[in-house]
Image 1 (cartoon, rainbow, N blue to C red):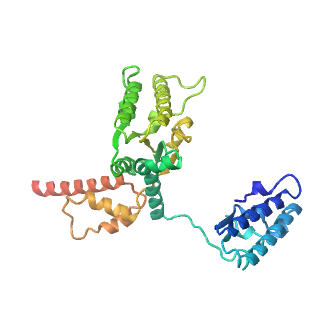
Image 2 (cartoon, rainbow, N blue to C red; image 1 turned 90 degrees about the horizontal axis):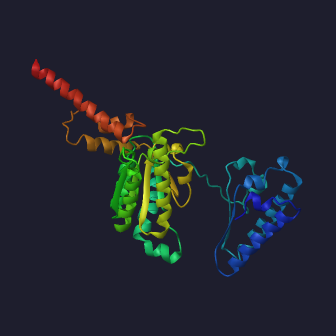
Image 3 (cartoon, helix red, strand yellow; image 1 turned 180 degrees about the vertical axis):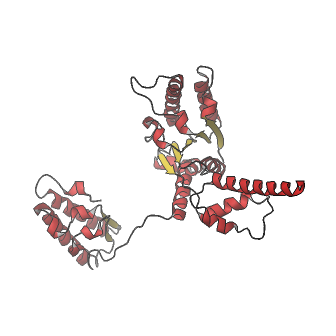
Length: 347
């Protein structure tokens, strides 16, 4: 891999030397029959247009052009070498690179659609939750540490809790759920004790998932000296300290994953937002049109719908509605029908 930091060196000639060594290593791999990919990240910063670059950049561009032309000649003997460049400013690259024999093809990587983002979310959640439980032996064989915590965030009512329960069901894991209302007890120390008992139960029942709903109320940002010193703030800091201790203790346990949901990720203490605690942070968006249609269909399956009711059309008209919003919409429609029916009965 080649990036701006590795090429733009302080001493003259070091960048060109690094390029030559990278290509030489790729040739060595290819000569043994092993495929090699040379990846150049942010190539617009390494090879800018001629009218915008300095002398050292001109030397680096010239060296890269020479190496890529040499790669073209060697490709008949060593067909296993591919050069890939990435950029978000394609027009800022030197035009000499954007021709046949050098970068022969250009592929635009677009922003994923709503449907694609949902598929990415499901895949990431599956990798983070299901794989460590179902393929624990493979993790051990490869020496990989599994994800310890996953934070789901998104607008209220986007089925974050349902996703967590579905992940537990799919991985056949025990499910333990806690909320801020359960942990903020009127008795001193009761919340921390409940937290410790839950982690202990999860260890005994592993594989297991511990789910924290409204995580921003359980682990709020700590205030500095002179900040809020109210009772709730003090209890919150004690709960956070206990949670940090218990999550750090999961390094010695196997088959335990912590899931948390929030609609205010910025309100969570930064100490939790690091690898080893919440390794993954996943955004849960509102449902797409197909998801909205399925939600409407589920919430109206016991209702008698009129012939003029088109659920698909309603789904198309309710963009950015969450699952909870759609459930409320169905309930209000039912209440309107009930009022109309009662009025007819009394009349």
